[in-house]
Image 1 (tube, helix red, strand yellow):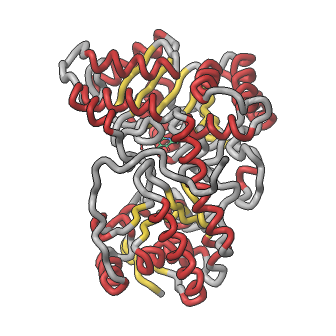
Image 2 (cartoon, protein in one colour; image 1 turned 45 degrees about the vertical axis):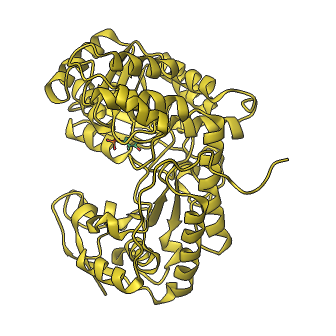
Image 3 (tube, rainbow, N blue to C red; image 1 turned 30 degrees about the vertical axis):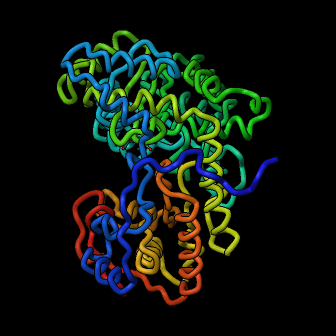
Length: 457
Ligand SMILES: *Cc1c(COP(=O)(O)O)cnc(C)c1O
């Protein structure tokens, strides 16, 4: 008998308090924060859905592993435990530990990027794009057309457009493409998965042209679960087996261990090429640390090794993906437009459709994010014109989509927390026609969404 209620496949072992606040208090806090949710004190947030990065709860076995951590500078046993756990799923020759994902990206693109180089992906995550562009290379997104349409129900909206990839390679020239990347799941595209068939297709094209193929594998387990659930012929496979097949298609990977490896910090770069690994290790020593700890303490390495065994549990993944869909489907049911199908780690509200009376340059996503906080103390993240609107030439252009992301931290909130979020969203929907836009009153030179200040119109 299969029941509908999603019970968390864990019980609470250690708790952190949530301080209750009133709408009046929150009105003051958000005004004091210049209407920027990044400027709030997190103690003043009831349900924090700003990001799923590093915000998950570790298990008792991970905390126990922290005690087992060995802090030897070189050759620590904790390093060997970590390396084995990574290679168990991703059997690349060389594993290079970093303090988080962007450090792995920085090292990789310092080694292989540079002027004249172009790096295609389904969709580059923002730190990946920034690190590519900082090296003076160009980042190109080649996701399938369905992946750009919020309402399209394609089961693998993270897929690469294989025809476009091959055309791109022929036009750009193999010598200018140091690597092809694939982000699994496609974070910037709504946490949408990539099919195994598509990964095989990209791998074949890369082999045919002798271009290395790297994964940005932050949410590899969530992606593998979607493959198991949605792809023909995959339903009887073990997730670990699917992950190993994905790894076997690639030549290397960058990783943020703050996502699926269930850590609060960490990352790695892994690859097969001996010479490139040696270049990367030399860069690692400059900015991160000695190759057997990189940017991490021995205890972090041990916690991640345990996290890698827990995240591939079918019970965990079933709960994880179902509980994200539970929130998304409930919002859709009460008439709030959300990106479909619901992704793995977050629900994305389409603020353009939800608040059609607010013009894109008056930031409908920011308005919605502020109201979610005011009404219910929920912190989401605007992913729209505030984040992407300012152009390198100084002009301001509306973003392609005006989204508010509600990212779900791993193993952190219970179904009653999520039921509360749904109830708050219902009230927000009732008040929606009264919401107004914003102007930016103070703006930094770059990455304005983090520190800008706003005023209501
Ligand atoms: C988070 C993330 C990164 C960057 O990792 P950090 O640990 O935040 O530096 C890269 N790619 C994707 C897809 C991510 O989600």
